[in-house]
Amino acid sequence: MKFYESVTLALSAILAHKLRSFLTLLGIIFGVATVIVVVSMVEGFNKYFNDKIADLGSNAFVVNKMGIVTSLQEWIDRSKKNKDIKLDDYHAILEHPTYVRDAAALMRRRGDIKRDTQTLQDIDISGVTANMVDIDTIKVDQGRYITPTEEEHSRYACFIGYGIADQLFPSVDPIDKEIKIQGLPFRVVGVAQEMGTVFGNPRDNFVIMPLSTYQNIYGSRGSIGIRVAAIGPESIERAQDEVRVVMRARRHLNYNDADNFGIVTSDALNSLRERIFGTISIVAIGVTSIALVVGGIVIMNIMLVSVTERTREIGIRKSLGAKRRDIVRQFLSESTVLSLMGGCIGVAIAYGLGKLVTVFLSMPTTLPIFWTFMALTVSASIGLFFGIYPAWKAAKLDPIEALRAD
Image (cartoon, rainbow, N blue to C red):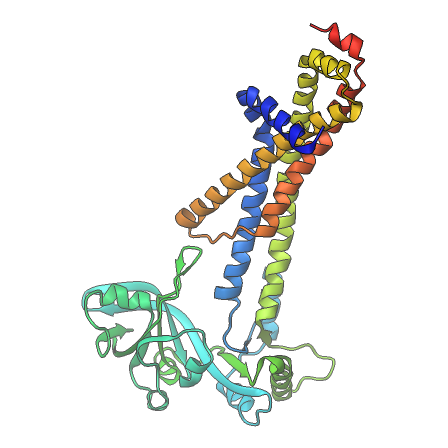
């Protein structure tokens, strides 16, 4: 029996019992769909994380008080041990740079802003040095960024996010218009390009002012953050070492003392993400794969029923010269095609569910080609594996006894 003939017979047998075949495939369908949805969400999140969260700027990293904190106890310990980072530290980093191209300082808090009678609450308010525009991922859409002159003279000028402009100035040009922060009038000098959302939370609701103005309003107590840019991608690690040496020397740390400050890099953020979501994805895929095993057992059970129902057919085929391998091939083809059809339906459902998740939950999903082919291969393999025993049982039937079956 040729391959295409066995596949044709398998499709005929499957289509002859459409409802039974569909019910048989439910385990495979749900198993494949669930695995693909989980993988799509994890892959989509990974890409989104790399593009929107872990991107600290061009060849950039951040120096701050706490670094990356992964537990409450770690946060408590670092709060006690780590010293605040001050503007003197920022100036020291820029004093004799070798692998550091530039550095910018910032402070941040949440607050309310107002225009006329309209108030926006819980807005991200930052004070930055003017050179932040050369390091940060925020880009100018209208107007301009904060200038060194405005920073030097503590001017009440601000650069706002797209969301702020859209809400406070829906039908007018926001440039040179006035908003109030802490009751003080600020002139809008520029608007940022739209950046979208992170899991439904807007990234465009922010106001940036000169760091000197920020400290005049909110005070200079507290720790600043320093965003540092290396001279090139090949020099990031050397720039980190250079900054670490400066910070440790200023804090008089001995050789064996641990850093009492944090350095946050894109690689460190991605490593944390991989540790967290790598474990989650492995567990999720392992649990959902149980449905595939259950689906395989159901396929084996239905194939055994099919062998019983078609005993006489098997006897006729053997009496006409069909060999054992022909019978085995026929039933293996049927179980494999049946399972593969379930895998295809599961992938289609997973694709649709991924689109719905993206639309309604604002969570990015990506359907990787590798995992799609892997799911189809696994589903076909399950049909092949669980079809071996029914096919072997059918091939063992004695043709005389089989012909006597009702």
